[in-house]
Image (cartoon, rainbow, N blue to C red; front, side, top):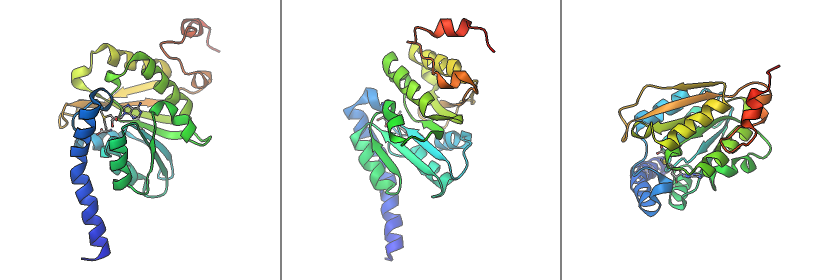
Length: 230
Ligand SMILES: C[S@@+](CC[C@H](N)C(=O)[O-])C[C@H]1O[C@@H](n2cnc3c(N)ncnc32)[C@H](O)[C@@H]1O
């Protein structure tokens, strides 16, 4: 066996085992991990095809799990851009570091993403997080970090599970997107995922709103909204 074929067979073995490690992470922390099994190839393809970044872009992935989207994002960047993968579960972090040794895997909470950007802004932020499982305070903190970390012309891409579409936490997350982004698009349901899911694509507003992320906890948001637009 040549060293090259050895590397690719160990990469294949890591990819094969990844879903079982994901299940182990879910059993340890079901609410945080949010799904028992990683996203399917079909959902990963839909998410990454929605992303509109150049090959030299700075991309941030929040909640990469064991790398369902990471693999395709790295392929798209093709060693020319930069991918920061921010994951909170130590089990998933270990898998990511072994599967993608050239990717910057950060063991932290998504709410701290700005600290890891080193003064730069991301061209695209891709969320693999289960927003419907989050308490309002955490949703607000992560959403505020996304607004601060994204370049003015940047794109935010996220997914949601179809069965949780009308959950109060999902409705709250949708409100955050519609309040903070000028354009929010939703894909048709991707049925080849367990559970079926859809993809959101959000484009940042241009102008003063971009500098002031509005969250549901922001006491000034009604005042700001009623202020006349220049
Ligand atoms: C629903 S899973 C999806 C994983 C992967 N994106 C996929 O589609 O297979 C959500 C992931 O987000 C991670 N996560 C949850 N809360 C997080 C946080 N505050 N910061 C970073 N990662 C978080 C979980 O550990 C888990 O790996």
